[in-house]
Amino acid sequence: MDRQKRRAFQAHHFCLPVISDEASKINMNIDIKEHLNPKVVHHCLRLFEIKHYPECAHTAMKQVEINFNKKCGLKSFTPISHTIKTMFTPGKGVRLKVPFGEEEQEYAQELFKGAFKYYRNYTAHQQDNITMDIALRVMFIASELLDLLDACNLSLEELGGIKEIKNVLGIDDNNRLEELLSFVDGSWIADDVCDGFFEDLAKRGFTVDQYEKLFELNIVCYEEKPYKPDESELDLPERIGFFELTDIGKEIIETIKN
Image 1: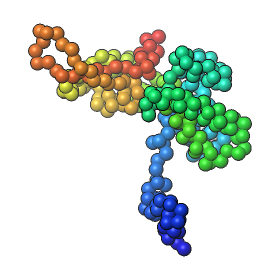
Image 2: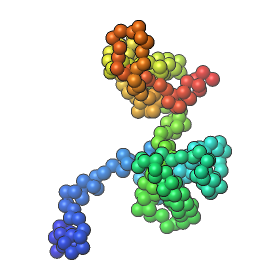
Image 3: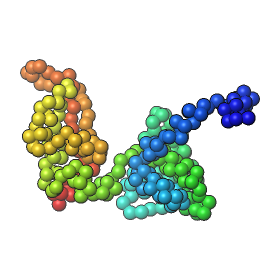
Image 4: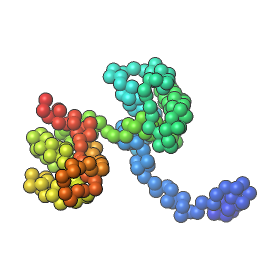
């Protein structure tokens, strides 16, 4: 019995879905990097690719531990077993980012506690048993837990520091980098009319490509807000969008000035 007939037989007798050869090939071509948390991609994916599966899995769960402690405001390393029991209790203020709705917060916390303890202990103490399949599974679990922590952006250090930021942007010195960030920070666009903004950007010697990379690196964010004008104003815009530096952007400016 060939593969397709076997699938049809199983679907008929065991109520399993029939998956065509074409669909199987599509699934096999999925780029897992697109579905992993950026911190897992940064710290773990290379380990997975070179088949260091135990280290890959352990590093993934270690990232969850590090970022949980950061969310709790702990500056020095503290074993998560000492904090996880207390930080999810009512009144402690640690809330997860729950995509399915805030009403699922309690269940998300239970998921986080159980999944972390199970996989963290296993990856720390059963490394000889960690195969490719287990490492892959752990990377996805760690991604889910990091997403719940809202730890979805790389830090300045993880991005390679200011030196690498300048390299990506094609900027040679710190003063030019500070000039670009200071210009963008606080700029605004009314009703999506952005010609003037990009003209001013070009006059300062910066490019649209550099502007776009600021968003890719999570250095700048943009938010539209309803406009509340003075009564005397004419030709009022309906909405205004504001550019603002992210925490990483602010850290870059602070580091350059110091």
